[in-house]
Picture 1 (cartoon, rainbow, N blue to C red):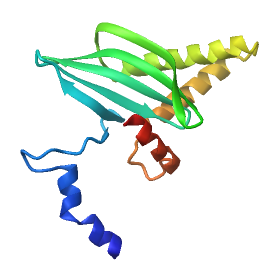
Picture 2 (cartoon, rainbow, N blue to C red; picture 1 turned 30 degrees about the vertical axis):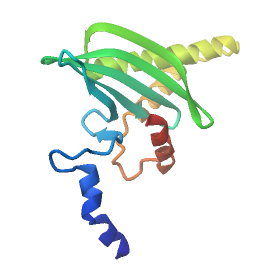
Picture 3 (cartoon, rainbow, N blue to C red; picture 1 turned 45 degrees about the vertical axis):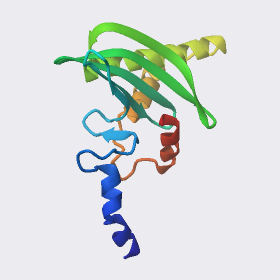
Picture 4 (cartoon, one colour; picture 1 turned 45 degrees about the horizontal axis):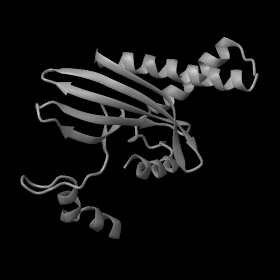
Length: 166
């Protein structure tokens, strides 16, 4: 019962969604539609909005740099990070110029980047693997990044990643 009382605390909701004129805590916000955390949102002097979107699984994190210009949404860049113990290391990066953002485009580009990363590591270590097996592994890893944070079976260990996002 104490948890229920604590969860209904007005100050908790005021911190998450304050009334107009009061500052909101800067924490990553989960966007269920895009299946990613929204963070580092800002507006340029010319009125364009930018944000970073981060999605992750237990093996990697994908960072999208998104720009909202007038009525269009562009993808400015995609970064792929692999986990190294308690920190993330950049392993692939692509920048784009005036490319419309769509989920299919981002997913396809992410799959290409993961495949390139796997193939590069395998080549450096002189490991051979059938292309079908590589494709299956790439699809499994990328699909893991599109799992909803709100699902009951979402790996609670991944909550440790949120401080990395901040």
